[in-house]
Image (tube, rainbow, N blue to C red; front, top):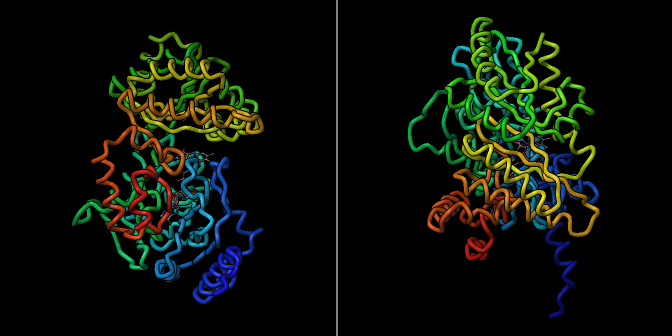
Length: 477
Ligand SMILES: Cc1cc2nc3c(=O)[nH]c(=O)nc-3n(C[C@H](O)[C@H](O)[C@H](O)COP(=O)(O)OP(=O)(O)OC[C@H]3O[C@@H](n4cnc5c(N)ncnc54)[C@H](O)[C@@H]3O)c2cc1C
C-alpha cells in the first residue's frame, strides 16, 4: 500500500486533533495557525523554543476536563501554561503537544473574610488576587517579582516565592485547596477552605509539581489582614561577603524581618539607571523590611541597626516616607528587567543555608572569573534563595554553552553546601538533568512513582523535571 509522505501524516494527525478540539471549545479558544502558535513557543527561558501543535484557552474546569479527556484518548501530550513567565522552561512546548493555557480562567469565585480565604480560577494573576481584596484591608502574601504578570496556576506549579516570603512563607504555606483535573479528565478536589484538611496531604504533592500531575483550575488561597505599617531600610557594604555575613547574623539573632533582599554592584548600577530607586552606589546592598505598629517597627529596626553596624556598612538609610519605600521596592522588583536591558542573562535559582552565603558568594565570584563570564547577584538573602544572573552574549558562538556549564557548576555548589537545586523557579528543563546531583536513584524513583499514579501514560508536561535517562522506559511504555 502506498503511504503518504511523513509531513502529510503529521499534518493530517494535527488536522484531526484540531477539529476535535473545535468540537469541544468555542472557535476563539483554539489556536492552530502556525504564526499564532509561535506566541506560545517559549516561556521566560527564551533560549529554548518550540511551537506546539495547537493551543487551547478554555474558560471553565469542564472545558479543561474535556480537552484532557480527548488528549488522553488520542495519546497527545499536554503542556499546562499560566502566563508563561517561568524561568526554568517549565511551560516550553513540544512540537506534538497541545498547550493548555488557563489565562482566560481569571475569575474570583468566592471571598470569605471571616475565614480569611479567597477562591479563584488559577489564570488570575498573582497581583490581582491582592487587588481583589485590598480595599477591604487584606492581601495575598507570596509576591514573586513577576507578580504583575504571573498566574496563580504557575505559582502553584512552581511553589513560587518572593521578597516577602521570609516572613509569610511561599505558595505552599498560603495554599488551602485546589481543583485538579487529571490527564484522563477526572476532576478532584484537594484540600479545602480551612487549614489541614483531612486525608493524605495531597496538596503538598500538587504544590510544586510543575504541571506533571494534573491541571489546577481553581485554588483556595489564604489571605491576611494588611499590617499596620512597614518600613524598608537600605544597608550598603563594600563587599558581597560582608553583606552575606550580616544577613547570617540577623537570622541567627532571631529577628524576623518580612524581607532581606541582596543586590551586588552590577545589579545596583543597572537597576538605578532603570528605576531611579535612590540606591547608594556600593559593592553590595541589602534591602531589609520590617512591619508592624510604629513601636514594633522602631524596635526591630534598632536591633537590625545594631547588628549591621558591627559589619561597618557604608550606608544605613531608612525609607523616610511611603513614597521612598515604594521606590525602593519598585527598584528591586525591576532588577531582572533592568539587567535584561543591557545583557543577555541566564537567571539561576538555588537555595543554600544562610550561613553559607559568604562562602558561596565568594566561590561564585571565583568561578565567574575562571570561566570568563560575569555574574550579577540579586536574590532573597533572608531565606538563602540565590539568583545568580550569568551574563552572556546570545550572538557569540559558544557563550550559551559556557553559561550553561557555569550555571550547572553553581547549582552543584548549592547542593554541595547542603542546599538544593531550586528555591522557587522550579526544575523545568533547565535543571532536569541535574536532579541526580541532588537525589539518589531511590529518592528519584519515589518521585517517579507519584507521577505514574497521576499520569500513568506520561502525557503531561513531557520531558521536564525528571532526567531523561531515568524516565526513558516509562515514556516509551
Ligand atoms: C522578571 C521575572 C521575575 C521573576 N521573579 C520571581 C520571583 O520573585 N519568585 C518566583 O518564585 N518566581 C519568579 N519568576 C518566575 C515565574 O514568574 C514563576 O515561576 C511563576 O510562578 C510562573 O507563573 P506563570 O503563570 O507564568 O507560569 P508558566 O510559566 O505559564 O508555567 C510555569 C509552570 O507551571 C505549569 N502550569 C501552568 N499552569 C498550570 C496549571 N493550571 N496546572 C498545572 N500546572 C500548570 C507549567 O506547565 C510550568 O511547568 C520570575 C520570572 C520573571 C520573568
